[in-house]
Length: 48
Image 1 (cartoon, one colour):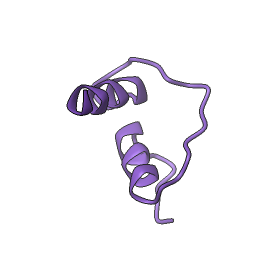
Image 2 (tube, one colour):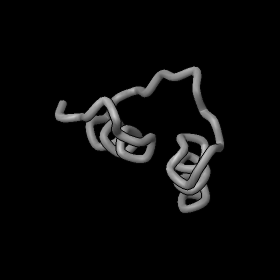
Image 3 (tube, rainbow, N blue to C red):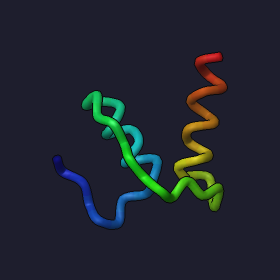
Image 4 (cartoon, helix red, strand yellow):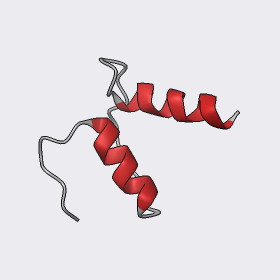
């Protein structure tokens, strides 16, 4: 995988989804528009 250590959560989430990977984390903060929690909420709102 070509992923920088400095990649934001949005990039990590997209890479995991595109490659059918499971993303395990203990950090789902809501700090910023690219936080993992925000990305997941946006994706869910598009699906539901």
